[in-house]
Amino acid sequence: MLHFLFRRVIQAIIVMVVISIISFLVQGRLGDPVQQMVGQSVSLEDRENLREELGLNDSLVDQYMRFAKNAIKGDLGVSYYYKEPALEVILRKVPATLELSFSAIVLIIVISIPCGVIAAIRPKSLLSKALMFFSSIGLSVPIFIIAIFLVYFFSVEWQIAPSFGRGETEVIFSFWETGFTSWDGLQHLFLPSLSLALALMPLFVRLIRSEMMEVLQSEYIKFAWAKGLSPMRIYFVHALKNTLLPIITVAGIQAGTLVAYTILTETIFQWPGMGFLFWDAISRVDTPLISAYLMVVGAMFVITNTLVDLIYGLVNPTVRLSSHGL
Image 1 (cartoon, rainbow, N blue to C red):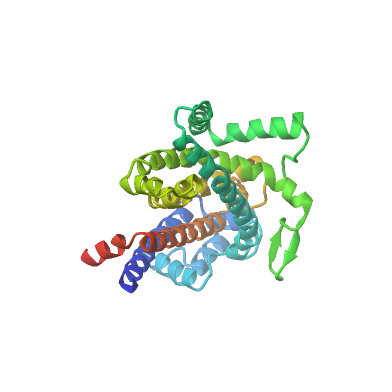
Image 2: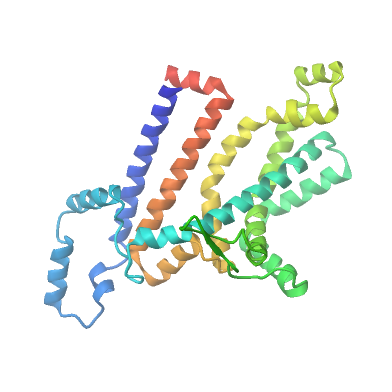
């Protein structure tokens, strides 16, 4: 297990180095940082002095090495707009994005697992056909269309949920701003989390159904029926447990998709998270903030996938054995 963990950590470090190179190159391709910092009123001599002071006249390799050393220390530059360290600006938005993503994941688990199991148990039933029909539509419709429909029905027509903002929040543990502690915060969370969940839910419903239908034909399930076990135990313990491996794999892959959808969702619902901040930074050409966002999201993605690999290794010991053989 330690060898398996060591290999995954090395892979994670390599991926983070690649992400840091991309983030560094982004800074130099979105305009002149000196011009963005000082504007048009500063003389050419002062600009040149500032370029020299910032090390922008150094070679590309020297600039990257300085960027990498600062990144290791947690220094990802200073935001042009906020005039604060970019990492601090992003970290203030992390709770909102994590709570939105967590709520969407809970909805996906709570809804997709029962729907997938039901569709697998009775594949020819009217309910199963309806689930497959709506899941096909869900896979085809872009997330911004889903969000617009949710806003129209829940906010405009029925007026049961707010369409933008985060609502009332409370600071807990001296650093975490949460909306989970108030009814207003939960109301504001409902539409963006449901929109985010609906974008990914159809994939998991179809995947669970497909894997469950295959598992239900296996010999050990037939043996469980012969032993007289209850249907609920057979379906949700014996059969569902053996569908977890492909689901865990797909969940790890979809982690990046969730981040991309978060940008769209937060922008549509004006949710004050990392995704909305990133979109705002692009509109202002705030390159340190854009670069810092890429680094932070990249780190989150790498950590998530490393944890998924470890969970996969715990669930399926053959993965650990194969890694020893490589």
